[in-house]
Image 1: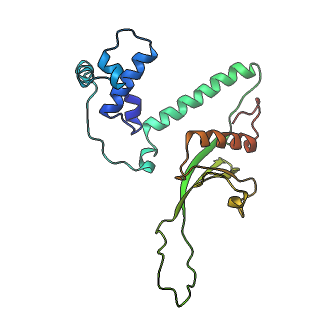
Image 2: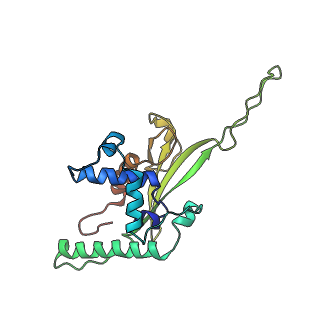
Image 3: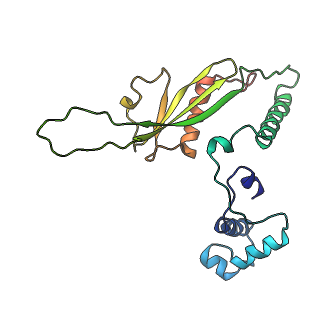
Length: 212
């Protein structure tokens, strides 16, 4: 709960109660209250008691924070980055044993996605046509995921199209090596991110001696 809050994704009252229920079920507890089992959620009095016992936790109304601000350069993100980097160093010492292992800017990639809106084109209409269709201001959402390392090497873009099935013409005029998948709202999902990781590993060309 604390980690989620630090990353600006704090749990609501209902989410915390559902988490409590899922936890006791996962631990295969036998003394689960009947009302918990019936509603598949912990009771309100139980979460109140938990908060009373955990004085370092509190219920607050979160302030609106933009995604760019939430993921900006701050102490929490920097600490997490170097902790993850230290784990990579520690693992490499075990895997490579006697070999000298150095992580350079070539092997560290920055990956991020952004939203692009495809606006409708305007065409000349016949003079006799009375009706008029006004295109949406923002158009259809297409998510683009890109990766780049410290010396400017890039991974070909990966597109998330707002469709049910991917068609080859969707990648027409895209950069060489580009690929994509679909999701009706056009967002990046966990399953699409796994596909992107396969796309990333195919083009990043990492090896056991040079992990990316």
